Image 1 (cartoon, rainbow, N blue to C red):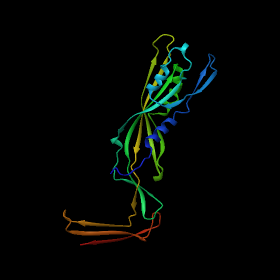
Image 2: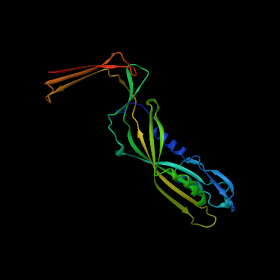
Image 3: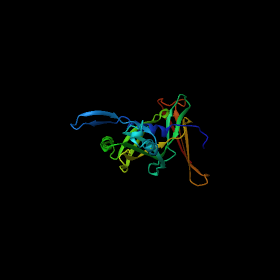
Image 4: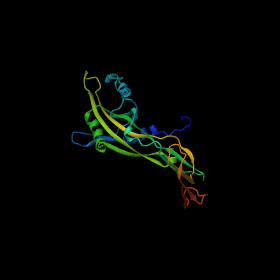
Length: 250
């Protein structure tokens, strides 16, 4: 069973697609008169929350700091995978695509559905920056957003990837003395409904089918025979064909 080497990069494609959704967010900072004095593009990286918190807090005293992590920033990480039985379909279903030969087709069995958890973190030093970022995200999730990915290009399979926003929470670390750097962290939890596809194998082209009907479970008393043949028998996928049928009763 596990003797076919294949890799479609399913998780990688989904992670890249998810990150691309949030890598163009910008915010404006205004003066007391409402004029924009600074526009910032919010950096995005794939990294766990603990890593960014450590970088933010590693030099908490402003007077001794030569460089600090510039805020606001965003990061995201995959948090888990779980099988989704509600999207399961019959495993015997197949996708078939014509290949360069005239005697075989590329075939692939139905995919296996999984849900992938992804968390997006928003870090800022003031609440207004964080709220600008959050309000540019939430309107697109009601509560899901759909992306279309080229899952298996060789099989012409495009996969619709629903992304559900499950939960939102935030922490405001305001405790400490005046020299302690404040950090506001919003956490958005998402579920990505992805599919895992198996290997592509070659299957012969079927040009004749025989069906026998029996009246007993021992298959000793045949009562009907039906066969159908492609005409012409040398036809290849994509040709105009007809069928020659034969039916007999015994």
